[in-house]
Image: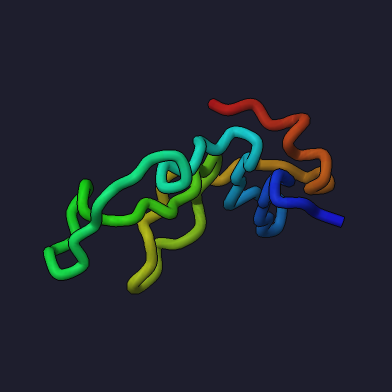
Length: 90
């Protein structure tokens, strides 16, 4: 059974298009620090909640109203359960 620290992957044919290494995520700053968000003010880098994940591979998206593709896909023909042991960040 998966847990909240297991990697998250998406594979399309022989290419991994998304990989999140949950073990390497930074601590959630909103659980360890107090802060203020003005919900009536415009969203800015400092006036928002950052709920993003840090992706190793982020090649999904790019469509209408979707986040842009940020990395290339990674060629991998093996089973996804073994991918984190064989992946080498470029």
